[in-house]
Amino acid sequence: MTQLRIKVVVIFSLLAALSLPAWGAIAPAHYRVTALGSLGGGWSIGYGINEAGTVVGEAGTATGSAAFMWTAAGGMVNLGTLGGTTSWGRELNSVSQVVGVSYAGGHGHGFSWTPSGGLVELVGLSGLASTANAVNGSGWIVGQAELTDPFFGTRYHAVLWEPGKATRDLGTLGGSYSTAVDINTAGQIVGLAYNAFERQRAFLWTKTAGMKDLGTLGGLRSSANGINALGQIVGQAETTGFQNHAYLWTSATSPMQDLGTLGGFTSEALAINDSTWVVGYANDSNGVAQGFIWDSVAGMRNLNTLLYGASAAWTVIQAQDINNQGQIAAWGYSAQGVLSALLLTPTVPGDFNGDQRLNLGDINPFTLAMSNPTLYAQTYPTVNLADVDPTGDGVLTLSDLPAFIDLLSDGGGGGGAAIVPEPGGAMILLLAMAWGGQRRRGCGGT
Ligand SMILES: [Ca+2]
Ligand SMILES: [Ca+2]
Image 1 (tube, rainbow, N blue to C red):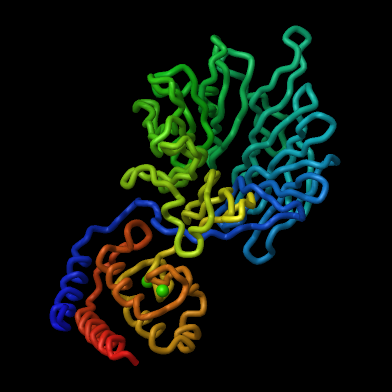
Image 2 (image 1 turned 60 degrees about the vertical axis):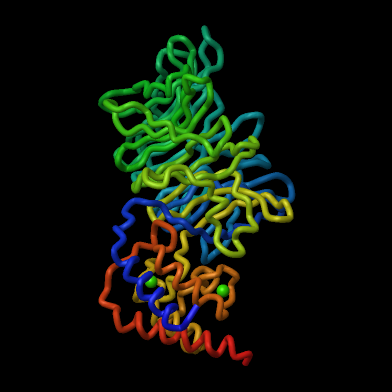
């Protein structure tokens, strides 16, 4: 290709990029994986994430397991147990109130943990056992508690723990069992309950309307795992073909939407954020579970195809929770087979000025990074080169130049990388000339 033709192609590509529409609500296309470590037992599982990117879950200890809370600044902290050798953290809110379960004496015991108060056992119903699954910003906790009934024996019902109030039995849909799995800021609660035919059904509970059956995808059973601030609900439901699929429920007047699979028979949605991005797991055509992210534009995507650079060495089995920044709490395996809680952080390859967008404003920082890495590092101290490196190999070389042009021309392949039109004609020419110069030097065998 002649130098002139290269320049024309560069300019044409960049101008074409400017005419692309904004990506809107499409989920990010690239993620960095952070392995969260363990508490001495060599393994961990991530369950919940809040808006600050703090993750909770369960980690192996020398004698069993313990609930953990992980922050970027402090790493993994052991939250302890209520006396046994097993506990796990299930979810946390914006003030780092963590809820979960401590297992002791043959029973699970729901707990709340706060930085100031530590672990506190939640008061159950008439039985010993309980489970805490989620907490909202007002400190409302939902889960399940045991009932000892002289006629029916032991039963388990969905419950609400509201600060300062008695443990509230949320009942069932007419059957013998229920459990509450998530709660949003408005106090809407979702979970699963048995109906009068002892069929398992997803429910939505509110103080005014009580417990309502959310239906299925045409089959007999369903369950609900997550609800966002908009009242949108996700979970798993049986289809008319007797497969269990991830679904999205948006209102009582529209049917559940089947989110599909990754080529297999089974999928399950575990969480949804306020951008209607859904995460969970889905079987591929080999029947192997893969973490997924779903949005209404791109549909269901295998998270393992979106891990950037060295992060691709990880295998995400299950994506458990997602916050409004698009950060995901998950678990999976390293190349060596180590089970680990994972934090997936959206990255934008080519975003050399670190504003989470790829656009013409990244051209000058890119040329600086190529020509003077020391000055670049001083100017953009928060940018991790491994995240933005156009070829994804973690080092800046000449091959990153055409890769950077490609990223600019195709918008980085999706969400979080919206092309924002800017007056950049002069920079386009400068870049094209820089590219021509680099190529001359590269071809000159220096
Ligand atoms: Ca940028
Ligand atoms: Ca590179």
